[in-house]
Amino acid sequence: MWSKLKLEIKGIDKTFVNRKEENYVLENINISVEEGEFISLLGPSGCGKTTLLTIIGGFQKADRGEIFLNGNLVTKPGIDRAFVFQNYALFPWKNVKENVMFPMKQQGMKKQEREEKFEELIQLSGLSGKENLYPNQLSGGMKQRVAVIRALACNPEVLLMDEPLGAIDLKMRQSMQRELELIWMSKKITAIMVTHDADEAVYMSDRIVIMSKNRGEIIGDIKIDLPRPRDRETDKYVEYKTKIFELLSKCYDEDII
Ligand SMILES: Nc1ncnc2c1ncn2[C@@H]1O[C@H](COP(=O)(O)OP(=O)(O)OP(=O)(O)O)[C@@H](O)[C@H]1O
Ligand SMILES: [Mg+2]
Image 1 (cartoon, rainbow, N blue to C red):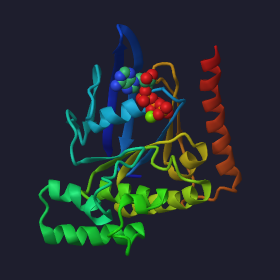
Image 2 (image 1 turned 45 degrees about the vertical axis):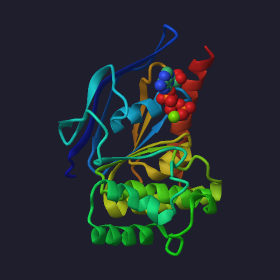
Image 3 (image 1 turned 60 degrees about the horizontal axis):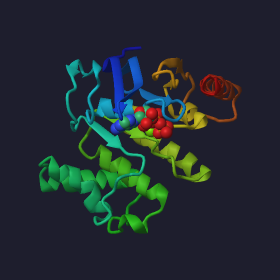
């Protein structure tokens, strides 16, 4: 199959210093992501997933190492990489339409183009008719969808998501996983998603990367070779899930030692 290297995470180190105490969070992290690939990052709390995602986003700098997008060095945030924050980060004083339009205005997109893009995205999200509602009038799942389409508004090349479905109940979460999958497939976008949910990772991902608390060391990089949409009941699906659980529980064992 033809594939193109989209994103290269090369030799990333990151240390935080708190009251003179060094916290070595990431050491020599390397991940290569192909164009259109959906990758999930899994690992115990505090292993550096958000830190790595924000370094890819260009929001903070690594102490060592580089991020390349299409072969170009990433030095700061850019519209080529969209970020969905864990808490959605919607503007509470803006309604759905204003929230989604905001980044397009910022980018200087023409009014007609903005309106057309908004129409496309609102259809995609299934939120037609909710354009004038404010975030406090939306359910968690709706807010999540607004955050995702807002992230897609400027046609990013890479979608970075930090536990985007974290606060959603199981039933809603499963239907959101399907919707997110459809959005991802229709846009053929490259995606990296942080999650704590092994089932979500197997359902959504082409590849699952598992980080440990040992300076973010990658202890598993597993390709999920299953047709989409995935059937959670199949033996192969369950096997993948068991494998992920085993790798994750290793991390927690290390924690106890
Ligand atoms: N700005 C910061 N200053 C100091 N320490 C930080 C900072 N950001 C993160 N850390 C530390 O870096 C480590 C990794 O944090 P990070 O938020 O990346 O973990 P995580 O894997 O996303 O965890 P979780 O699953 O709980 O979200 C933690 O020990 C955290 O305390
Ligand atoms: Mg985090």
